[in-house]
Length: 199
Image (cartoon, rainbow, N blue to C red; front, side):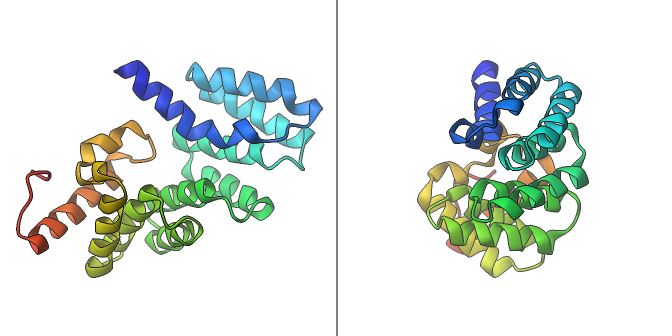
């Protein structure tokens, strides 16, 4: 089970890179960074990605990968800056908006998290992750009514969003954010008259 969770986590963080064009001078650096990331050597991955960005400034996916490595390393402000730089080059990327929202949330900027997650919902209205993240952000910002609406949409799109323990596989759902989503689920349960899914 641990292997599956690590595999899902790796794919969730580096998935957009698979389809990315790669400039030749950064190819070996990207491969080395990906290997370092897979081996949990975040310092090495971050160093390789920074060099790759210098070698291939036109390649936005290195910035996204760097943001993911920085986020996982706990360098949230740097991760947010890297996601923002990526979005300057590829403004319509849902994963980058979602990831930037998580970084902003962890930094305590709930209004920015809500903006990013709202952008993600607009880009992909069928994304349960975007709706669930937006529900957590809205709840943290004090908008319980709209948080409940977004939570119900996430649950409709994917029933797993009724069980917050299943979200632990994606490392972006850090305990603080999962706890807020848990509170939203309790709110939805109280409005609907009870459920077995939320203890």
